[in-house]
Image (cartoon, rainbow over all chains, first blue to last red; front, side, top):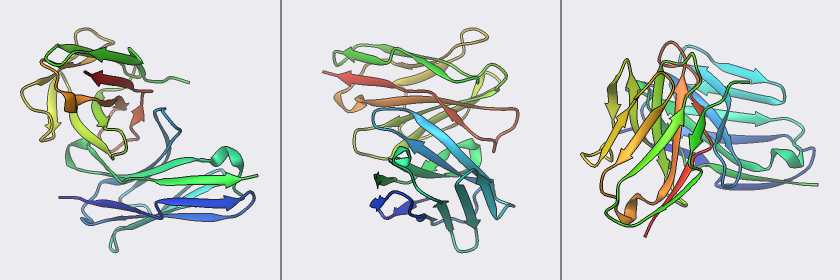
Length: 111
Length: 114
């Protein structure tokens, strides 16, 4: 059974800092890895999807990498802003199109 | 930009009552999903649906749950006899032509069972 873990559970950084969020998964037989953002009491906003055959994806200040063999993905946020404050979730794409989620990293960017 | 919509945003019900949660997926998407998030816990997969049938379901999705696409736009989740532990945020999601594509989530329905 796939287990997805995210480290750290919470992170507080000053504005402008570059930061890395970590995601690990126990079963490397994934179809893809998706990163989401969740604001308090809100739905999930898709940030990046990396297919199992890819190594990384970039969107603006966000860069996500995937290393299937080691069961790891990272989300790199460049030049963080207060508006980046949210919970970041990673999810592995499994057989049957289901996503298995981590518990998330709560990010606070201080101005 | 197309988005997944869900109604109602909040629902309060008594234990044992039936509830129907409604979703309108993105119009050209063919794969539909329900997930739930109990307060303070991880988002959990419930069910995936394609071509008018369930393609995958989790252990949570027992006989009390059912899904339906009653027309060309709506996708519903029915809980027949709600329990206290069904209280959660329920998210609908959809993805495009093939599996493995980005799943787009709706804003959720917060269900409270008293």
